[in-house]
Image (cartoon, rainbow, N blue to C red; front, side, top):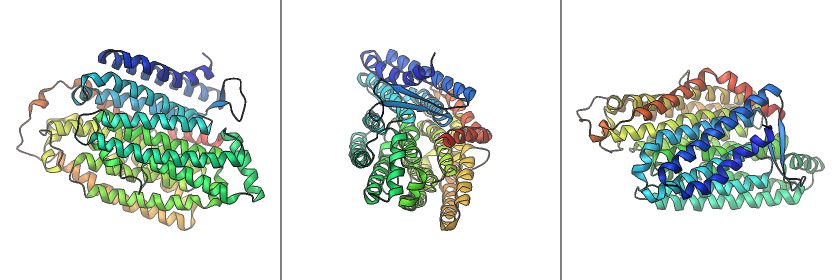
Length: 495
C-alpha cells in the first residue's frame, strides 16, 4: 500500500465510520470503534517503519489543487512516532476505562459516545499530520466539539456545567487562533507551512509588518494556550477532568490538549521559524506563563483533598513543562517538549482509571483519608497509580524522569537568565510534585480497617491486563528514552 494512502486513511477511516458507529447498538459500536483504533495504530506503525526504512520524510497532496489552497499531509519520523504513541494511548485508555462506560453513561448514549471517540481519533491524527494551518483549525474545532461531548456524556452531577465552561473557554481560544491565522494569511498569502515559513522569513528580513506579525503570532499562541489549559487559562480543567468517566478523563488529559500543543509546535518550527519566534520576544512571554503554570499548578494540586481534582491540577504543571521547553525556541527544546508530551500522556492516561478503581474499592469515596488501604484491596491499580505518580514526579527509570532531564538539558543549552529561571522552576516543581504525589501513594498503602465493598468482587482481569500494559509503556518511556528521542530529533531536524 502506498504511504500516501495510509496517511490519508488514518484520518478518513475513523472520520467516515463515525456515522456508522452512531447507528449501531452499544456493543457493536464499541467493537467497531476499537477495531478502527487498532487499524489506525497498525497503519501508524507501518508509516513509522517505512519512514525509518527510507530515512526520509514525505508529503501527501490531497487533491489536484496546488499550494497555497491545496491540503497536504507531512510525515517525518517525529509525526510518525507521535501518531503511534497517540493511537496506542487512546486504545489503552478506552480499554482500561471501558468497563465504567456502561455504568457512567446511559444506554442510549453509549453508541454516540463511541461516535465522538471516533471523531476525536480522526481529529487527533489530522492535527499530527496536517501540513496546512487552516486544516489544522478545522480539526481543532472537531476535536473541541468531541471533547465537550466526552465531558457531559457521564452521569456525574456538574458534568454539564463543566462541559459548558470547557466549550466557552475553548471556543474563545478557537476564535483567537482564527483571528491570528487570518493576520498571518494576510501577510503571507499562504496556508501551507512551507509557504508561510518562506514568506514570514522575507517579511522579517525586510523589517515590514513586524507589528502585525507579532500580533498574529501572539493571538495564535494565546488561542492554543487557552485550549491547552496553560495557566491562568486553566480554570475549566479541574472539573472537566474530575467529573468525566475514567475513559474520558484519560483521553482529555493525555491526548486532546497534547494534540493542540503539537500543532503549536509545528506552527512555530515549520510555519513561523524559530529565529522569528525568538526575535519577536513571544518566547519570553511564553516562558513566563510556563513557569507560573509549573509552580501554581503544583501549589493548587497540594491544596486538594479530592484525589481526582489533585490529579487534574497536576496536569496544569505538566502542561507548563511542555510550554517551557517550547519557549527555549531551539530544536533541542522542541524535541524535549515532544518527549514530555509522550511521558505525561502515558502516565496521566493510566492514573485516571487506576484511581477510579482505588475509589471504587473504598466505597466510592474520593477524599484522601478514605483511600487508606485501597492499594491492598486493588493491588494492580495501586501499583499503576504509584508508577504513574512516580513518573510525573521524575523518578528513574520512568518516562517522567527522562522528560525532565531533556527539558533541563535544553534549558542549560540556552544559557543566560532563561536557564536559571527554567531550572529553578523545575527544581521547585519537582519538590512540590513529591509532596502531593508521595502523600497520595503513602495514603493508598496505609493500613485501614475498611472492609472491601461489593465492587471489590467484580471481575477485573481484563482491566488489570490493560493497566499492566500502561505500566510497561511508562517503563519503556524511561528505559528507551534515548531511542525515542533519536526518532523525535530525526524529524525535527528535517523540519
